[in-house]
Image (cartoon, rainbow over all chains, first blue to last red):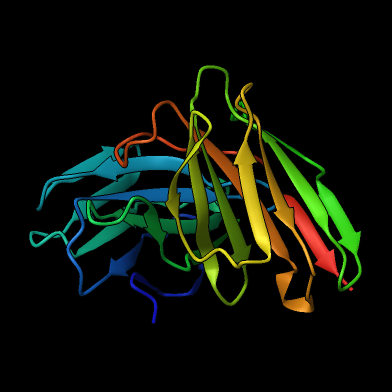
Length: 111
Length: 114
Protein backbone atom coordinates (compact mmCIF):
# COMPACT_ATOMS: atom_id res chain seq x y z
CA UNK A 1 0.00 0.00 0.00
CA UNK A 2 1.41 3.37 -1.06
CA UNK A 3 1.25 5.83 1.82
CA UNK A 4 1.38 8.83 -0.51
CA UNK A 5 -0.73 8.64 -3.68
CA UNK A 6 0.12 10.99 -6.51
CA UNK A 7 -2.21 11.78 -9.39
CA UNK A 8 -2.25 11.81 -12.25
CA UNK A 9 0.54 9.33 -12.95
CA UNK A 10 1.19 10.82 -16.40
CA UNK A 11 0.33 14.21 -17.87
CA UNK A 12 1.04 15.44 -21.38
CA UNK A 13 0.09 19.03 -22.18
CA UNK A 14 0.88 21.84 -24.60
CA UNK A 15 3.07 24.80 -23.75
CA UNK A 16 1.04 27.57 -22.14
CA UNK A 17 -1.53 25.33 -20.44
CA UNK A 18 -2.13 25.24 -16.69
CA UNK A 19 -2.04 22.05 -14.65
CA UNK A 20 -2.43 20.73 -11.14
CA UNK A 21 -0.95 17.56 -9.67
CA UNK A 22 -2.02 16.05 -6.38
CA UNK A 23 -0.43 14.22 -3.48
CA UNK A 24 -2.87 12.52 -1.10
CA UNK A 25 -2.64 10.43 2.05
CA UNK A 26 -4.76 9.21 4.92
CA UNK A 27 -1.86 10.01 7.25
CA UNK A 28 -0.85 13.31 8.79
CA UNK A 29 2.61 14.64 7.98
CA UNK A 30 4.69 17.16 9.90
CA UNK A 31 5.94 18.55 6.59
CA UNK A 32 5.72 17.79 2.91
CA UNK A 33 8.27 18.35 0.18
CA UNK A 34 8.04 18.54 -3.61
CA UNK A 35 10.91 17.47 -5.85
CA UNK A 36 11.49 17.52 -9.60
CA UNK A 37 13.58 14.82 -11.21
CA UNK A 38 14.89 14.97 -14.77
CA UNK A 39 16.03 11.90 -16.72
CA UNK A 40 19.46 10.67 -15.65
CA UNK A 41 19.56 12.88 -12.58
CA UNK A 42 18.60 12.76 -8.92
CA UNK A 43 15.55 14.57 -7.50
CA UNK A 44 15.96 18.26 -6.73
CA UNK A 45 14.02 19.87 -3.90
CA UNK A 46 11.56 22.56 -5.01
CA UNK A 47 9.79 23.46 -1.78
CA UNK A 48 8.96 22.36 1.76
CA UNK A 49 5.57 23.15 3.34
CA UNK A 50 5.11 22.71 7.07
CA UNK A 51 1.90 24.46 8.17
CA UNK A 52 -1.61 23.26 7.37
CA UNK A 53 -3.15 25.54 4.75
CA UNK A 54 0.24 26.98 3.78
CA UNK A 55 0.67 28.25 0.22
CA UNK A 56 4.09 28.83 -1.31
CA UNK A 57 4.90 30.26 -4.71
CA UNK A 58 7.99 29.67 -6.78
CA UNK A 59 7.67 31.74 -9.99
CA UNK A 60 4.92 29.93 -11.98
CA UNK A 61 4.62 27.08 -9.44
CA UNK A 62 2.16 27.26 -6.53
CA UNK A 63 2.30 24.68 -3.74
CA UNK A 64 -0.42 24.14 -1.16
CA UNK A 65 -0.46 22.02 1.99
CA UNK A 66 -3.90 20.80 3.03
CA UNK A 67 -5.46 22.16 6.23
CA UNK A 68 -5.27 18.72 7.85
CA UNK A 69 -1.68 18.20 6.62
CA UNK A 70 -2.69 15.01 4.77
CA UNK A 71 -2.50 16.25 1.21
CA UNK A 72 -0.81 18.74 -1.06
CA UNK A 73 -1.10 20.12 -4.56
CA UNK A 74 1.24 21.66 -7.09
CA UNK A 75 -0.19 24.06 -9.67
CA UNK A 76 1.83 25.20 -12.67
CA UNK A 77 0.69 28.25 -14.62
CA UNK A 78 1.55 28.62 -18.31
CA UNK A 79 3.66 25.45 -18.45
CA UNK A 80 6.87 25.52 -20.47
CA UNK A 81 8.91 22.65 -21.99
CA UNK A 82 11.51 23.23 -19.27
CA UNK A 83 8.90 22.09 -16.71
CA UNK A 84 9.05 18.57 -18.15
CA UNK A 85 10.10 16.00 -15.57
CA UNK A 86 8.99 13.68 -12.79
CA UNK A 87 7.37 15.52 -9.87
CA UNK A 88 7.66 13.72 -6.54
CA UNK A 89 6.06 14.55 -3.23
CA UNK A 90 7.63 13.34 0.01
CA UNK A 91 6.16 13.40 3.48
CA UNK A 92 7.92 13.52 6.83
CA UNK A 93 6.47 12.05 10.02
CA UNK A 94 8.17 12.50 13.36
CA UNK A 95 7.38 8.88 14.27
CA UNK A 96 9.56 7.76 11.35
CA UNK A 97 13.09 8.89 10.80
CA UNK A 98 12.83 9.13 7.03
CA UNK A 99 10.94 10.71 4.15
CA UNK A 100 8.16 8.76 2.42
CA UNK A 101 7.95 9.38 -1.31
CA UNK A 102 5.01 9.11 -3.68
CA UNK A 103 5.54 7.38 -7.04
CA UNK A 104 5.45 10.68 -8.88
CA UNK A 105 3.68 12.43 -11.73
CA UNK A 106 5.50 12.34 -15.05
CA UNK A 107 4.86 15.65 -16.82
CA UNK A 108 5.58 16.28 -20.49
CA UNK A 109 5.13 19.78 -21.87
CA UNK A 110 5.19 19.95 -25.65
CA UNK A 111 6.22 23.12 -27.49
CA UNK B 1 25.39 19.85 -9.68
CA UNK B 2 24.28 18.91 -6.14
CA UNK B 3 27.81 18.34 -4.86
CA UNK B 4 27.03 14.68 -4.13
CA UNK B 5 29.03 12.21 -6.19
CA UNK B 6 28.20 8.59 -6.87
CA UNK B 7 30.24 5.91 -8.59
CA UNK B 8 29.89 4.04 -10.79
CA UNK B 9 27.21 5.63 -12.96
CA UNK B 10 26.26 2.31 -14.54
CA UNK B 11 26.82 -1.25 -13.37
CA UNK B 12 25.90 -4.43 -15.20
CA UNK B 13 26.34 -7.71 -13.41
CA UNK B 14 24.93 -11.22 -13.14
CA UNK B 15 22.58 -12.84 -10.66
CA UNK B 16 24.31 -14.10 -7.53
CA UNK B 17 27.08 -11.52 -7.71
CA UNK B 18 28.03 -8.83 -5.21
CA UNK B 19 28.55 -5.14 -5.97
CA UNK B 20 29.56 -2.02 -4.04
CA UNK B 21 28.15 1.43 -4.75
CA UNK B 22 30.01 4.46 -3.49
CA UNK B 23 28.80 7.90 -2.42
CA UNK B 24 30.64 11.05 -1.41
CA UNK B 25 28.42 13.61 0.34
CA UNK B 26 28.54 17.38 -0.10
CA UNK B 27 31.35 19.03 1.77
CA UNK B 28 30.27 19.60 5.38
CA UNK B 29 27.26 17.26 5.29
CA UNK B 30 27.26 14.65 8.04
CA UNK B 31 24.25 12.60 6.92
CA UNK B 32 24.05 10.15 4.05
CA UNK B 33 20.87 8.45 2.84
CA UNK B 34 20.46 5.59 0.37
CA UNK B 35 17.37 5.14 -1.81
CA UNK B 36 16.28 2.62 -4.43
CA UNK B 37 14.13 3.78 -7.35
CA UNK B 38 12.27 1.32 -9.55
CA UNK B 39 9.39 1.81 -11.97
CA UNK B 40 6.88 -0.16 -9.90
CA UNK B 41 7.89 0.90 -6.37
CA UNK B 42 9.03 4.47 -6.88
CA UNK B 43 11.69 5.97 -4.62
CA UNK B 44 12.15 3.79 -1.52
CA UNK B 45 14.25 4.77 1.49
CA UNK B 46 16.85 2.15 2.39
CA UNK B 47 19.06 3.49 5.18
CA UNK B 48 20.38 6.68 6.81
CA UNK B 49 23.79 7.24 8.39
CA UNK B 50 24.79 10.23 10.49
CA UNK B 51 28.46 10.85 11.22
CA UNK B 52 29.33 7.18 10.87
CA UNK B 53 26.41 5.74 12.80
CA UNK B 54 23.23 4.15 11.50
CA UNK B 55 20.32 6.50 12.22
CA UNK B 56 17.31 4.90 10.50
CA UNK B 57 16.53 1.83 8.47
CA UNK B 58 13.85 1.46 5.82
CA UNK B 59 12.92 -1.38 3.49
CA UNK B 60 16.47 -2.64 3.17
CA UNK B 61 16.91 -6.33 2.40
CA UNK B 62 19.19 -8.47 4.55
CA UNK B 63 21.33 -9.06 1.45
CA UNK B 64 22.08 -5.32 1.41
CA UNK B 65 24.34 -3.52 3.85
CA UNK B 66 25.85 -0.08 4.13
CA UNK B 67 28.41 1.84 6.10
CA UNK B 68 29.69 5.37 6.48
CA UNK B 69 33.41 5.84 6.90
CA UNK B 70 35.35 8.37 9.04
CA UNK B 71 35.82 10.61 6.00
CA UNK B 72 31.97 10.52 5.69
CA UNK B 73 31.82 8.76 2.35
CA UNK B 74 29.43 5.83 2.26
CA UNK B 75 29.20 2.49 0.52
CA UNK B 76 26.16 0.35 -0.20
CA UNK B 77 26.91 -3.34 -0.62
CA UNK B 78 24.44 -5.53 -2.51
CA UNK B 79 25.03 -9.28 -2.45
CA UNK B 80 23.42 -12.42 -3.90
CA UNK B 81 21.94 -10.17 -6.54
CA UNK B 82 18.57 -11.02 -8.08
CA UNK B 83 16.93 -9.77 -11.26
CA UNK B 84 14.55 -7.70 -9.13
CA UNK B 85 17.44 -5.71 -7.68
CA UNK B 86 17.84 -3.93 -11.02
CA UNK B 87 17.06 -0.29 -10.25
CA UNK B 88 18.47 3.18 -9.82
CA UNK B 89 20.25 3.65 -6.50
CA UNK B 90 20.51 7.18 -5.18
CA UNK B 91 22.56 8.61 -2.41
CA UNK B 92 21.58 11.89 -0.77
CA UNK B 93 23.28 13.98 1.87
CA UNK B 94 22.17 16.62 4.33
CA UNK B 95 23.86 18.85 6.83
CA UNK B 96 22.66 17.24 10.05
CA UNK B 97 19.99 14.65 9.29
CA UNK B 98 16.83 16.16 10.69
CA UNK B 99 13.62 15.65 8.73
CA UNK B 100 13.50 19.37 8.01
CA UNK B 101 16.97 19.33 6.44
CA UNK B 102 17.25 19.63 2.68
CA UNK B 103 18.48 16.41 1.13
CA UNK B 104 20.78 16.81 -1.87
CA UNK B 105 20.67 13.86 -4.23
CA UNK B 106 23.51 12.47 -6.31
CA UNK B 107 23.12 11.48 -9.98
CA UNK B 108 22.50 7.83 -9.09
CA UNK B 109 23.93 4.46 -10.04
CA UNK B 110 21.94 2.41 -12.54
CA UNK B 111 22.28 -1.27 -11.62
CA UNK B 112 21.31 -3.90 -14.16
CA UNK B 113 21.29 -7.53 -13.02
CA UNK B 114 21.21 -10.03 -15.91
